[in-house]
Length: 362
Image (cartoon, rainbow, N blue to C red; front, side):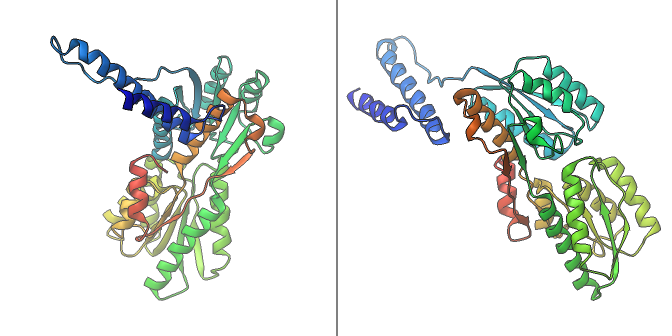
């Protein structure tokens, strides 16, 4: 017993008196709770050993904070994975995370945010489908002192005037440039030519992430005058619509050599159409997001590459910001912009990124 008490004393000291609650101290705190629970149970066990066997019981946190997450569409894999990460982290941090599904509809997401604005929250995180579409409900939240965190896509052109706490964004232009370059270079090597056709399948055009990826695509195209862009129809993050677009494209343009997609789900949908048409060795495909299925496709050589748009980091990052604001009031210490970085997924890096994705780490 004396050894256990001494261990508890050392654990308490390691937390540090008066320190801010960071990730490391949070983990230590949970370890301490487990140790104390086991110590208490072992004391009870000595008295009850003759009549019954005592089970080890781990403490389960009761939610004490409440957060709303407004998602643009939970039927998309990137958003769904981010939502699962937020809920998982919420359980660890004792935050009741309530998810709202915008269903890829600006009107539906606006109604969600109007409903959210009428309730009490410790903080609200929003992944908007369109820029400048939800200014009024966001202003209502902020006027009531509820922190609002913007994820992945700009809520408004001027976030500072709107009063958003922080904007967590990947470098969409860079991602578009990296993947477009990769598919063009792969097509050049295979065709042994600088002149060929490429398709640019875009996301929702009101989405600032899609706008950045399109800019990245065109930045690269300007460096390859022989590459002809034959189609830029938006797939709108919709697998069914993308499938239809590509079935039509392959009938009208049998000589396509390369394709860049604004997300991996659309890339994988088109890849199924391309494979069915037996053109998988002709058309080189690249996407964005670094989803688990896309990483696996890169490993198999079915996709040239993708790039990590770290949904896990973005959603858990929003949760951490809200947690610190709600518990410490550290609003002044939160930067108004946080770049959420990611790497290029190729055959060398795909296994590592796939493993991280499976475990909600990116």
